[in-house]
Image (cartoon, rainbow, N blue to C red; front, side):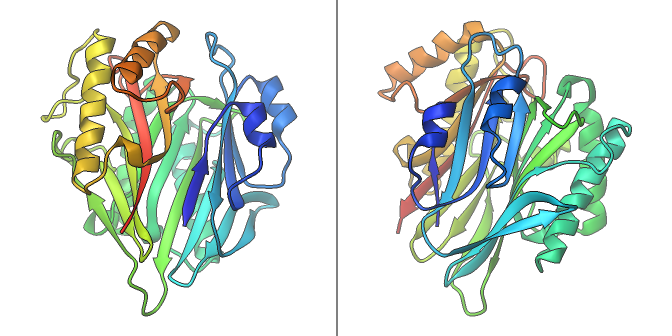
Length: 328
């Protein structure tokens, strides 16, 4: 079972874990991140040199039980394989293109192909992927290009005819200097297992596939222990796919959170079931607006880690990704 631990960079990395650590993600200045790289677990290190007052942050992912084995690819630690009596999982972190100097579209295609190659060596396929994270340097310059590459990859592998993963796409540089760096979770039930997975719709939004953005709004894994929900990066997008409340960060935050709550509601969950969340905020001056929303809704100030970053559209000012768990 996946569990999560949030916090600021140094206390989080030094704090005791809740189980076996399978991956971590750090976001800050290159100097801060260089000091945090231990090489002991797969990691995705994102550079945010102009954080506008945001502290360096990190998230550590743990499994509460089972066995864990490291995964290496081309001499680099890129993932963890773990299992329990019901399913096998692969968590990948820090998978990028083979050539970080290639054109950006080529780098994106290479990153997807590398994920596929790593999974294949573990006996998985891309059809087993339930969740991805795509962090792109200068995202607003080439997000449409990234979508075309992802569409072509998914089409060639038959992903559109099956399970389309939940995903986050955010603008960030990374310590490798590549145009894109990724993470992913894949899951495969064992023979005779009762574990299931499903794509989830958003009651307040159309499918992202309707406007050719190749991800599902959310995904769930149901095990004998409970239901895990992975909500994709979610922003102020109206039902028809257009940006809602252009120029109004307060209303964009409110709508985003209503969408998140509506998705959770389809699984009889609420924000109290959240186990991990990241708030991507376009400008530092919007942080107090987000904090005000949290206070007004009875949630702690550290409900989500706060990252200053571009979202996939220049007029989107806020995005939230969230995982949740509820025992059955």
